[in-house]
Image (cartoon, rainbow, N blue to C red; front, side):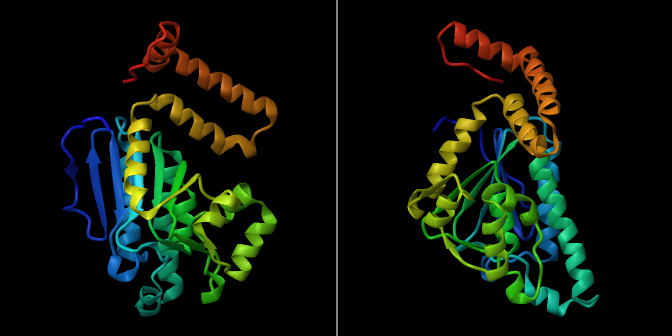
Length: 271
């Protein structure tokens, strides 16, 4: 791994997450291990705020998302829902809006989202886990929707992502039966990119983050945007978007460096 600038921990404004920055890599850690990293009102607000900072940062290339302790996230905090003074319906509506703002920011930011699933991902935790541009899971990780078991319907974008990733039939099975997938099976189904031994998860994700941070920010952002719009475009619309993006990339400093490095038979040094 290459040497980087001193890590800057931005923790004063957050209580339920940790937000750290090392050079052009940020790390967001869901930090309620005593509650299985359940998403309560505070965590939802703070996750949306952290994601918003990532969107607004023009120097950021990679965001790592993971959980503290044994769980990635058990999803929405049911105790918080039950105890809410405004009632569970109003509480969940506000919570979902914050979660969805975070999800939208992660999807539309130029930086790549690298998710490290360190343990069980359930409910909204499942939704967060599969939203990464690259998803790496520990062998001990498990995935379950769990919504209908609690009399709830899915949120967090899972009804958008899952049919696109694994198809309608498998999505129906996960959402209606609350079947649990172990990491190896989730990889086989196409929900993940890699599964690694638990002890190797952190190092694997750090190495990937370094790899992406050394790459071309604009080109990687264009990949995200092309894949985000592909299902809503005709072939011609998609090709027009491709033409706009590749011409913009070719004219950028990174594009010119990449072309020069290829012709010069050397490794590129992207900004």
